[in-house]
Length: 287
Image (cartoon, rainbow, N blue to C red; front, side):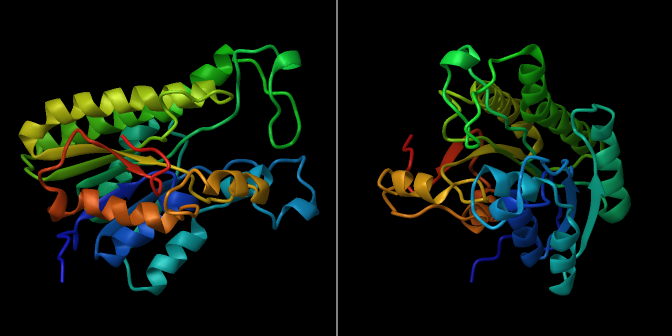
């Protein structure tokens, strides 16, 4: 039996009201970690009708983003796990130290940080008249300052500030063990039709490697988990059919597939792994 060494550790997981974040929070709790769940409940889209609620696709994904973390918290507690929760917009930089304060008040200093929260909206360099269409058959918007800035605020600036806050507190208390896992995407290098999302994740990858270099001397590992096609509610059946042949393991991934790798990267078994990007997508992309 492998002992991950996570029992009693304090883990902070952002964006954990659904999908990969929710599965990760549950997986850490199952290892005996005390989990602090962060989330941001987004407004439910007004353009979704009842017929779209049960089918995977953009509509289903947006509805999941509109949930609270209550079900995640209740599920962990039902299994005997320790969990607390706070909702906050990480685009507001004042919420970042406040998030650590709340986690420390609940369980003590954060030892494992998972930067999973993300912002994703389509955009393109093309004018709307010439661009592709989204899943609602609407022309993709041309990149704007607002689209750019929101993606970078959530997907790269917030994780960077979270890592700095984690490091500051870790060093101040003289700690010698820490884990940071940042969630990117296997399309970060080139992401047509989601140009701001891809670029902001690529920036996160650079931040992560620099953090690994600087924080390693303090016993902190920093790694990047890069998911491939994971069914978190957004992949339509037709899209799934076109994706499967590109995946050597011949299926879409699940949030639990990713969460298991999160546990590994946080575990004692990964003590000599830092500054690395690990693709988790059934072979969809190979480094």
